[in-house]
View 1 (cartoon, rainbow, N blue to C red):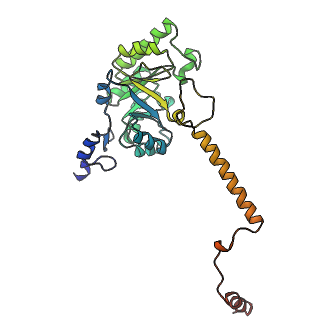
View 2 (tube, rainbow, N blue to C red):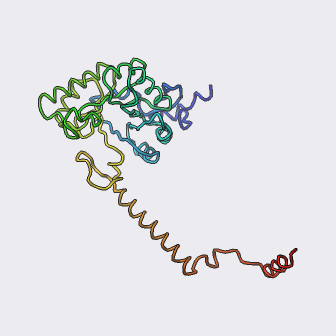
View 3 (cartoon, rainbow, N blue to C red):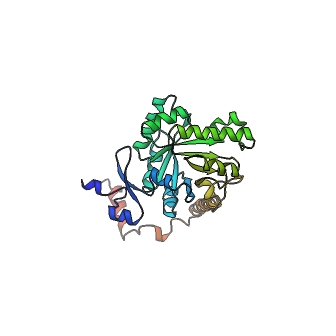
Length: 300
């Protein structure tokens, strides 16, 4: 029973309460602590806007948790689960929805299996681009599911490519209907991508789902932005909907230049007999070489 008294990171129940964390058991059977449960998230709808990111490394996940990010999405590959598991370990107290590959499930049974695989390594929910039928199967199995509407990149051929959608009445109604279908299938949330700001505001009022906005303005219940955009990990051009709060790409370029300069100096020192210097070598004891040569040259 002692193992049940602490959550991820060994946080005792009283300390967890002081930090605003809730003790949970994951669908995979592990005890832990989280900042939110699905119920907590639903209770925030219409109360305040939450913030969400998708980290690409354990370091980013740990920084996001320390900074107070409310929820995270994590890319999950069932063939290589360790990267997602490492991110889970790096931010043990933050609610995470693992984003599952669209093509990894071709039936309801496979959708459930994929969801269970994600939950087994610590996901609190899954995020998917599935049809309502697949979402319903996973939800009935007890897996919290977040759907995807608006611009769904992998299905963008249906909406005219990688561009904003919902700019006509017909498109706006279709997005609303797809979100209601996701709601009726049993999801708890939906990511809404690159639709008009005011449209998401009106849709959010008309669904019980938590709406996660990426490029869809401020009308959602959650504001979502990739960590690589927040941190400026990449060079321009940047997505129009993104904002760079840091320029880590510049720092990485500067670090690379420093690496090259360091290697060049090392090469130059070796070629010009400046390395190793007296401070880098073991001084030869008196009479060592004479004794050594005598020993080896005499054949002993």
